[in-house]
Length: 226
Image (cartoon, rainbow, N blue to C red; front, side, top):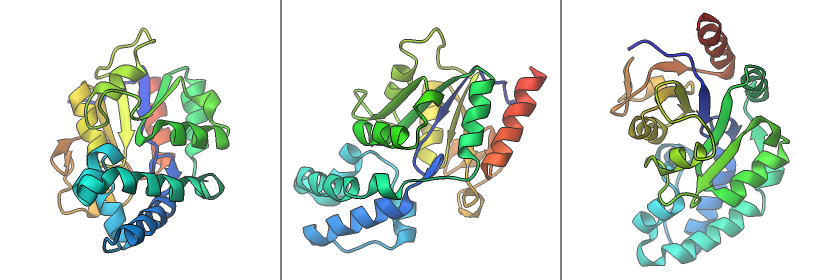
C-alpha cells in the first residue's frame, strides 16, 4: 500500500526525538539495586524498555511494583532535565512539520508530567499541538487510547493520513491499533532478527527512516507530491 501524504504526525519521544537511553538505564539500575533485582546491561535496557511503567513494572517487581515505581521516578527525575539530549536534526524536523502546518502530537509511554517537563526544557512546546504521556489516557501504548486522546480536540481523526513515527514495535502496534500509518525510525532496527522490509517484530510499517535527515526528506517528498 503506498505511503499517504500526512495531515498530521504523531511522534514517539524517547529515542525518536531525544536520546534518553543513558538516563533511563541509570535510573533503572539504581532501582534494581535498591530492590535486589539483577542489573541490566545497556543493551538489555534498549531491548526491554517498551511498555509504560504501569504495564511493565508488575512484570519485573510483582506486588512491589509501586514501591519500585516511586524509586525509579525519584532517580529519573533527579537528573533527566540536565542530561536531556535532542537527537541530531530533530528540531529541524519539527520546524519543517510546523512550516508545513501539519497537526503535530507526541504520544509516549513516559509519564505525562515528566514528558511535558522535557518538552518545555528543550523549548519545544511551540512545535506540538498536544503532548500525551503514560497515565494521561485510560490505557497506554500500544492501545489506541492515547492516540484518540491526542486528536480529541482536533477536527482530524486517526487514519492512514496520520503518520506515527517511532523506534519500537510498541509504536508500530499502536499505529496499527489506531489505524494510522506506522513509520519506523532508527538505524539499529534493520539489525534486529525480526526485521523485514515491511514488518518489524511482527508489526507493519510503511517506511523506515534511519535518521532525521531522511525523515525530513520523506516528509518534503510526500507533502510536495500531494
